[in-house]
Length: 487
Ligand SMILES: O=P(O)(O)OC[C@H]1O[C@H](OP(=O)(O)OP(=O)(O)O)[C@H](O)[C@@H]1O
Ligand SMILES: NC(=O)CC[C@H](N)C(=O)O
Ligand SMILES: [Mg+2]
Image 1 (spheres, rainbow, N blue to C red):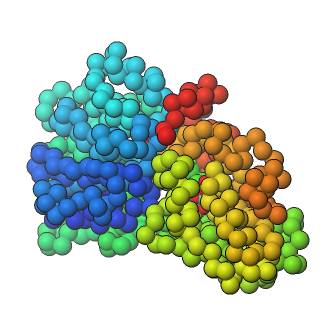
Image 2: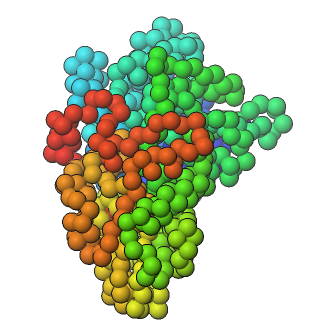
Image 3: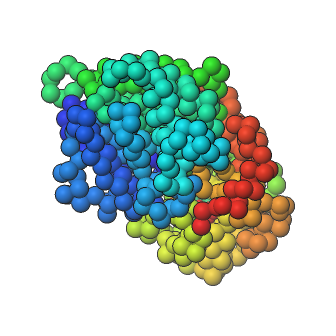
């Protein structure tokens, strides 16, 4: 997952994009970039690291123009440390296009070969986003004859992108001198929402924003218009005129369940589902499962692992009628550990990030709630810390089911071997974690907890079930991904 934002304003875009990126930092910490458009000239700055350290005043001053886009990257293809693969990506024809992408393409081998041998395009990195911008550019080139650009031509190019590209993609592009294009894959796997507000200059024109999460819109005073539909493309001209079109013949909304479990901020609403409410419901269902399988009579306290599991843990405590206590204190200056590249760094960071308060543990039977257990990096350390702090019995619970399969749609867990639940039964996992009991959410409970009360009927849950919605993910592909994985 990455965080993306694009906007067409009637004032300088640089600060607006920067502020939005700060709010999306939880979606990617590897690198970041902003591009703006001043007439037909693009300005851009991209670099490794997080938003706060990446943009100096002089970088910001150089980002001129009223249209802009920005990206925070959590790499899934290529290398997290490669500055060349930071986004946005630029191609100079037709018109000049700069693009950002949240997601992961699954037919990169075919696209690389087609782009090189048939479209005669040069690729300079291993990024799938570079493939996406080149496919879009090629297809747009095929549509346009004169200099004039009609949104219908842009939509026809997006239709062709849908034909050629497989996997997940929520993307935003600036077309120099023309406007901003946003589109979402036919399953709407990754999120994308748009909003608007009247320009402050009194011109009566509209300013538009498109972003990964609704909290960005809310915090900057935009009215939420709607989620961009799966397969849909939206084009916003420089004067603020917005047009949209469904560019796929058979779109079907199947959003990523992991957004609700962990990735998104709880104060966002995605596809009409409040992330916070979904996490509360996950807690309710988990409580029922705990009551069914574990002896809860002797549990003294329920504890969350900060931050993401707090809503679920509070519900578990309430439903089971057990006291809720915060036994782990979090160092707010350490980022999210799960989205860090490299297992060594993730492991070190858990210890740096969380500290167990002895008084909360001594002689107590603890029920720990986390939102998910993926590699087990966090949970293994946590159990050890709880015991070292004097806990008597440790029951570990997860508000998501066991993660048994690789995620190939924009979350960096590409290999089976790294997943603690792959090919292990639950008692074996408990043993590896060192927990006395281990209880996971049931898959169907997760599905209903997330979708309850919404119009979403289907969820992308491949890392829990092994069913990949795009249909092109074969065992051969998974083995190839494993062999070429990110470090
Ligand atoms: O089994 P693992 O591989 O350790 O991954 C799962 C853990 O990683 C995430 O926490 P993270 O610290 O990234 O973020 P948070 O502060 O939002 O909980 C998630 O909330 C789990 O705690
Ligand atoms: N997590 C993402 O959305 C990553 C985007 C893209 N696949 C990259 O690796 O840069
Ligand atoms: Mg966590």
